[in-house]
Length: 111
Image 1: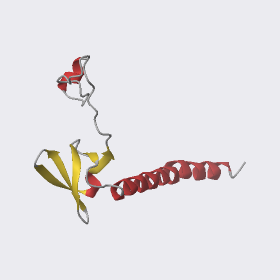
Image 2 (image 1 turned 45 degrees about the vertical axis):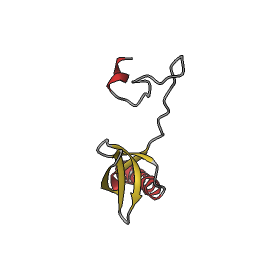
Image 3 (image 1 turned 180 degrees about the vertical axis):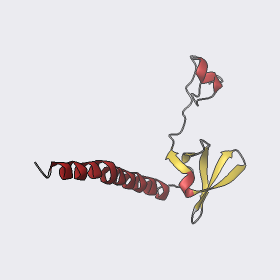
Image 4 (image 1 turned 90 degrees about the vertical axis):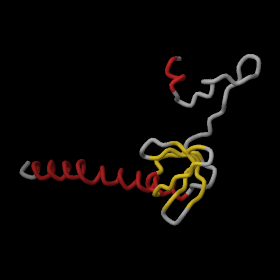
């Protein structure tokens, strides 16, 4: 019973320091693997929320094409996630209507 406060302190240390540190390490490993898996043509989103396609890769940088002919350079650490390519859905007669691409634009918010 005299060791009970010490046991509580050790458990608190483990819960507040060790467990979050392990989770951070796991997340960092996932980010490293993501950054190493980048290839030209991969659609990505940056930490700033900018969507683009990988145009080229440097030592510690990645060039993203954010519009046709517009290429910007970011640090590799700025790539937050790999996005899935958007597939446009056809209308009833087979034509693609504006706003049918479900790209998260203003037209999608009215649905």
